[in-house]
Image: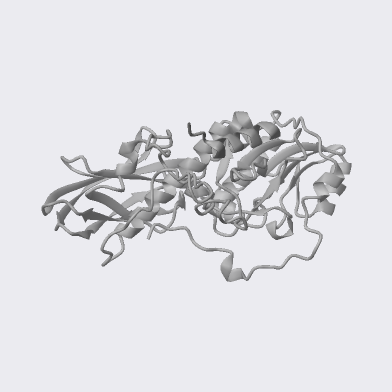
Length: 398
């Protein structure tokens, strides 16, 4: 009889740490990010001129080579519940609608623009109409029809482009762009985010601090403090948008984050549209971050977690809340203060959402953190700063 000793080991590790009840959430959050990345990589391959094809090493979990749980299906080719077959087929089909747009996050004073391409590897040439729509939930804020002549065996760019005025959107929104070939089963969709252009975070009674000393001085006076240092000052796991490559057992030195895990209904996220997992609006936030280990502080509540890999199973956090001294505290290991005016509206929007929560009656942190524990999150040596050209790699859909 065969026994899944690798899974038994992971289960016992989670049980020992008291996180076994979160196993399903960890699987869903990391797995849905993996699906988003699979889709992006396939689409980039299809949009590459002259590329003769692509090969996926495997879409199933692999029990060998120290266990690689990288599959959208399990080792028996059974759906793990991460995505549906129809969702994956959007980007991996004989005929695949594609788009190119500059970025994932926009502001309401901009015009969303995108170029449509179609990869046709069907047996015949195709021609007809391509329909598109940009939707905010049930509301269609833009739509149109493009003419298409699609020879087989290549990807064809359509002459006309998509353009939608975003000014009617007065609140932060996650939009869905849909493109389909009229009268066929071939369709595809993407998410983009729009934030109010004139939005400015309201600090209210919250004091902003970028260093440990600043935060502690204000907390001793009973203030409400948002501590958001430069991530280079923090002693945590280097933040990443992408997950571990292949297997953390096979590559033990690799950074261990596996994506964001959060509760979209948490009041701190009320003004920041998100799913429970990473999507492209988290790119800058996670790239400029550290994931802090809250294992020694089980009483402290985490608002935004970083999923750890299954070898370590730590409770990693990007954003947590606690009482400290005479005051109340939120610690952000994402650079909310340093990046808010760097042309990243999603950072400003998350900052404002967190501040609104901290200024509300709902902000009552139950956990307590001492000054020594707070200081332990900071590096003791002088950090080695990264060159500026490495700090702002763009997110786009080229």
